[in-house]
Image 1 (cartoon, rainbow, N blue to C red):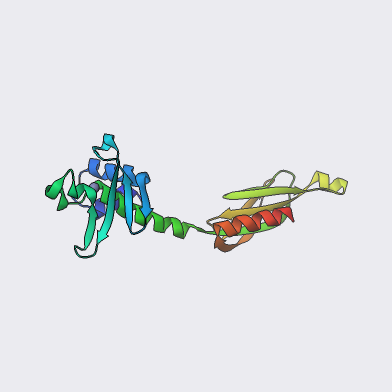
Image 2: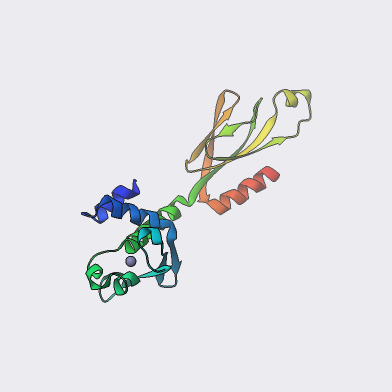
Length: 181
Ligand SMILES: [Zn+2]
């Protein structure tokens, strides 16, 4: 989903420049215990090196230190781009966590040339023993991707390897173990 479109839905009536500013701040957000810190940027009109953003249970809304300082009560009724960036960050993090699930597909294939696949493909040639092995070498291939099966391109042929779902760190460790074995 287009994050700008997503923001527009959340904050209807805000001008495009405001939405873009919020998006630009996404990389400036860091998480602390119970609150967020948004790095201040003079080019975005910030006067302080950092802003704190937290959820106020009593007010049922997000509060930013800029409401208490430079903008005063006028801004306090609205939403600043620091808060918008934090809201975006929180959703982005959720998406990243979901994307953390990947599939690992492994196999041994015979190909004249080094096999290729979409995604992160780890390939190792198995040392040949006979002349035939040299004509058409065997390869170990491990593919980490978002798809539940991997299509391996093998010298003009396509070989489909079924994947197993797991988290990325596990997939990476198993892939290396498979290649090394
Ligand atoms: Zn703010």
